[in-house]
Length: 142
Image (cartoon, rainbow, N blue to C red; front, side):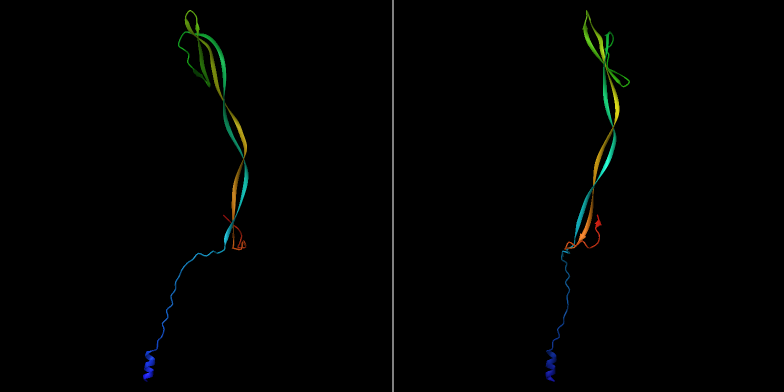
């Protein structure tokens, strides 16, 4: 019995405990995308009215003596009248209205027309695996 007691006291039973350690790392999946880009052109017709102004200048001889106040420029409708004076030596100095310059503004409208090209880009995204095989479904529009 002493042997049994000795055997029993020296017996060891290992206790095992499992532990879990969780971590993350970046892995290349071998998948990517391919972009397909196309450009379309559309010709647009532009028509826009443009205004142009021209001046008609007319010299009108007057040759009248000025005895009163000195004439100043004035408007008659759309016409600007600018008096042109000269001094004439007589026994006395008097002003004579030599001429008037008549400036009339006329506005005209011209039609402007030109062909304009506008560009637009479209991009298609195609997914593929590392081998370059695009067999993972149809391209996805972006």
